[in-house]
Image (cartoon, rainbow, N blue to C red; front, side):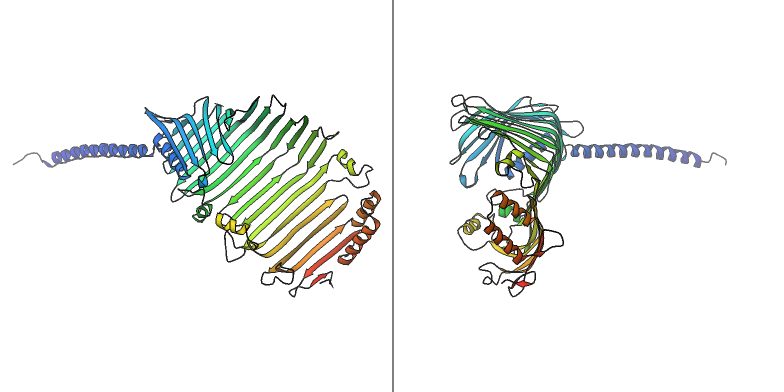
Length: 527
């Protein structure tokens, strides 16, 4: 028998069915992946309620009570009559603020816009048994304000910018009375932008970075009955700052020690390019006016469970003041300034690092001021400079942030800790033609309080150099400020503690204290 071979037909049927199955499988897989992708995208979208919930959690964790009327319409959550209350520690008083409304609008890209009415009002009130009570309103206007939140409920990212924001104080009442006469207080920011990240885990981590082209502060008042008045006009340009903090989810303002022990910490920097300010007023018929300028400055601060530190620096600044009490203006200027403080405050069995520094560079006053005590110009009128930089180690026995321990410390004659080491990295005092400089290092034996009259016995060396002292003494004698007898005693003292240096009118001195408590000056024992 002959007939067609069924194999090709079966093969074609199987291929056709396989193709159909493949197409169906691909379509279903694609559809499933699309749904999965859409579901993931939807779950990543930030909702207005997520932002509002985090605000409530953050503020309540800081000890505030926050309430508001909520209205969700379409993609927008409108919050109205937002009231924030705070009870002061030990129930000494209360404070509260009410914001008229804020809207949280959900966007198609999964972000949320924060929309502030323009203008809007913020009411506030406070009550304290000692400070009294008061209330008022801040009227806020803005131009070009944009604020957007993205991320997820546990990791929010804020971005904001504005062309102008103005806050003006109105309707102020203190102890039931409104200020008499004209009263103005307003703050105006221009060209601002910034970002803020808030991550919530076992703690709340906050990172910030912001800048502003300028900030203006305007304040003035006039009392119609007395004629007393005052005014302040300040402008700060080129502001910039960063901040980083780790906060407990639940904070107790009355227990700073506990919050620090739980891991609370923070650090930040602030800088500006230029600042100007004018301050003036009249009281009891006498008036004054001051003008201040600064070429910029910077501040860095840090606090954790063991240390508190500040580092500040300033560039050239000037102060010009006129007053009815003086017939001439007073001008003061600095070439540069600086301040450093790093102190331990946590109790510890081991000594901890500390540091302190102060710089007043190129201090100068006007010739009219010099003329009050040196009208003939006998003394050099060069700018004066003071620089001090020290560090060391100390053991802290009292936690200064514990109210009970701080109170006990204030009532006790016992020192709050022990000084173990002190390094004088730099000492410089230069003025009226004389210059004192030095450095040194000491350790302290806190078991020996007898050798130096209750002070822990030091051991170490101090190097000093004094230039121009004899010339200065001669000029002070010439001016009548120092008698010949007093000058002789001063010169004998310098001869006892110092030896002539390599340059004219210079004295060097090395003060050394050994382990036995013996004190020598340039090798000669004086104690």
